[in-house]
Image (cartoon, rainbow, N blue to C red; front, side, top):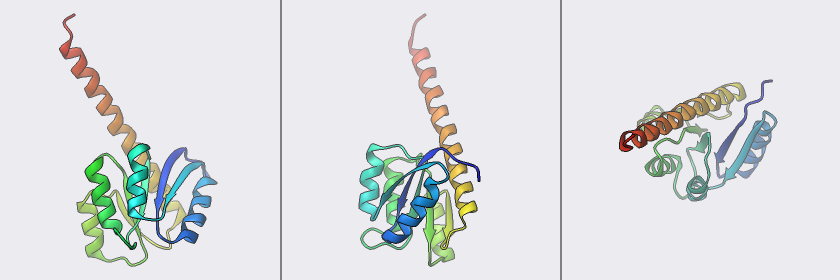
Length: 145
């Protein structure tokens, strides 16, 4: 079992599920933070950088789709994977339109989830690298050498 280094936020109102999934991800080298509501996820995403955010679709308060929408509004570069125990094609399409990286069904296949996290981390690194190159380019253009 190959370890992945990275930082993940798990968002689910079922605390037992959060605990079990966190442990399973941590044994594979990931640093895991958890949130039991969409509001909590928004607060945590504000001050930290996550390689992937995994959000349950069905939660009381603001649900997974609304959490996804608000997270993307604050930072369009976030890599968000939606998990659901009640898969519907419409919800999956809605999530993808709002920028979800992927849409997976519970019980989640660990190998698939780890691969999605690996892909999200890779994609995020490319985006951040491009932004930093763009920033350097702008600085160079403004300097009179």
